Length: 208
Image 1 (cartoon, one colour):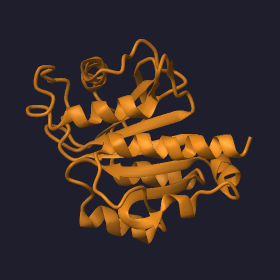
Image 2 (image 1 turned 90 degrees about the vertical axis):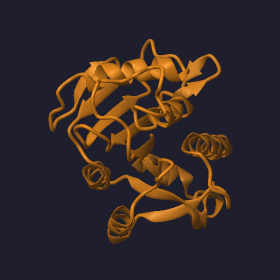
Image 3 (image 1 turned 180 degrees about the vertical axis):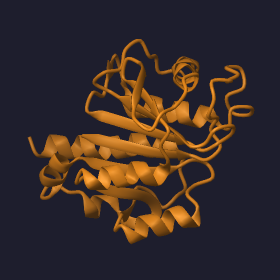
């Protein structure tokens, strides 16, 4: 299982979404939508082995977490507007501590960044932080160890245009999250997801 966790620092936390202004009045919800599209959509198909979390930390009711499960998604298209409509439907609901389904494959809950990460840790998943100063991903994931790591479930954490704050990074260091790099350049979150998928696709092919 491939899992991506995005901390969306200013993404809106209510259903009051202006579909004509996703970047501005919605706290860069456009970035979240692009990440969802990159996480799941292939040409004429979906990645069903992928789960994507977005942790919304903007006004008016932070934090709220959304969870997208590729094997359950239905009727969602890869364009930003379509994804935003489904996010709007989820955020129109009152969030509770436990996950509740909004539409097929899309869940919402009153959960924060640290809580989601600790859930992944408790489940025994291997967690990585995408960081341009980390170890190259090719040195961390390779044909010799990929099968074992894959069986645990692999989690990749990424930030939005603001990134993670010092407290978040210190928390991840404390629980032993390894930093890995996919490029010496600072990339958009959706591009990071595409590159990680490409690396893992090649590893999948190499161990068959």
